[in-house]
Image 1 (tube, rainbow, N blue to C red):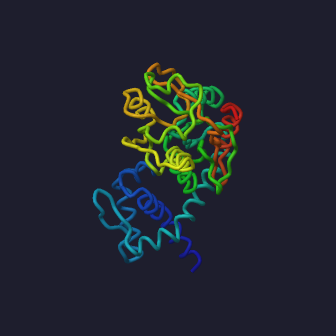
Image 2: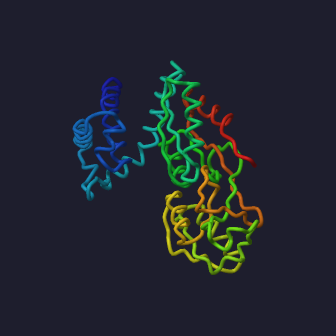
Image 3: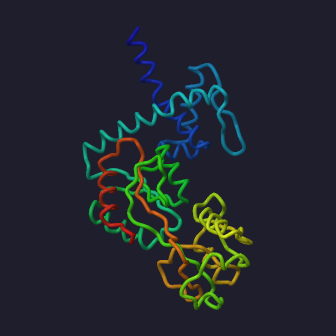
Length: 299
């Protein structure tokens, strides 16, 4: 009886892995990319699992797929187990050869490519056989990818309370105005002076926008935001075009059409290197150590 049960578990493992990938990604094509197998193999494995269980696990939903009631129950019961198995296998492989491996690294939209490029160039010289997969997104999205295991390590601004974080420093936020704006020649501006100014800002789910809204609310007004976009360089371009002012960190390169003016008070936010609760691979530990030693910001 034990031999029969073990054989069924062994044969079901790749089927569950395929189902978990599809359920997580919502697309067969993306699941196939994650698993590194043809899409047809993913489809066959999911159908085989449905045949074993005697019920449908997935159903069409637009261009992708969605979980059935049975599929949702199976996913909720097995997703963490699949993740733990992946971690165990990855750790064993990495420990066998710590010079190789893959690190999935995320960084925020407000961290420019110059700092990240220099960091990665130095790390590649230090550990040339470790591959680094990059993801750039806003802070909460990066934190969520750390939580569910899609990222190994990420620079997050500000660090979330529920994840392990190493503070690297702080990021100063300044008011960015067109070079011909009356505020361009000022040495400092108080937020209380800005109720009539149009802002170019990120959407409300972004932390930069949350800070803008909160700081303006403290002064008794809500910012007027005629233009919203999540791409930082586009925000700078719209400011340069005279369509508004913006709350942003200082740019890595000089933009003669935009002037950054300090704001009164403490207008900074912490920058941290964040990891999840799962055991890191040797490659991830090497990358984490390198980043903490080579990426810093003035506090």
